[in-house]
Length: 169
Image 1: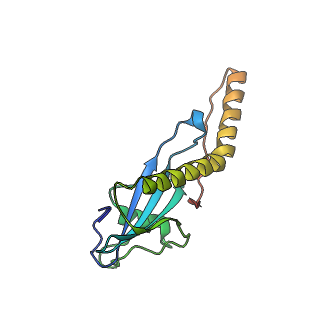
Image 2: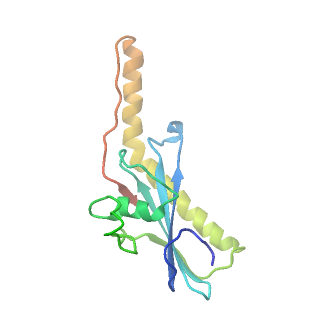
Image 3: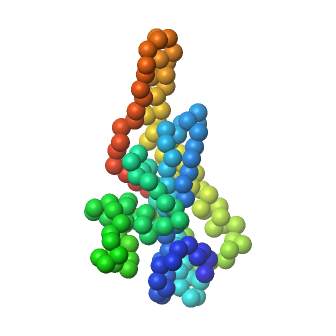
C-alpha cells in the first residue's frame, strides 16, 4: 500500500483520508492556518487514486489531525459534529465538494513524477489560499496602521468566523 493513513476498516479498494495542517506566516499572506486533505484509494494490485482538497476552516473548529475520521464528520457532515458511538456509521460522510484528482494508476513510491504532481497541486492550493485570505490580511494591516497612528487607547482585533471554505485546483 502506498500510504497507511488511518484505521478505517479494511476493504478493497481501501479509501484513506489524511489531513495536513499548514501554518503560514502573516507576513507571507496567511491570515490563519488551513488544511490539505488527501484522499487515497488503492487496492491489492497497487492501483491507486489520489485526490487533494484545500480547506480553510472556520475559526471555531478544532482540528485533530490524528483522528481523520472525526475530522471528516466535523467538516463534511450536516451537523458538523462527530456522532456518538451507538449511531456512528463505519464510513465518514460523503465529500460534497469533489477533491481534485492528482493521480490514477500504479504507484511506485520512488516515482519522481508522482512527487512532482503532488507538489504542483499543493503549490496551486497554497496560491489560492493566499488569494482567499488577502482581504483578511489587508483588513488586519489597515487596523494595525490605525492603531499605530492613534498611539493611545485599548484595541480589540477580531476576525469574522466563517464557514469552512473548500479550495479545489
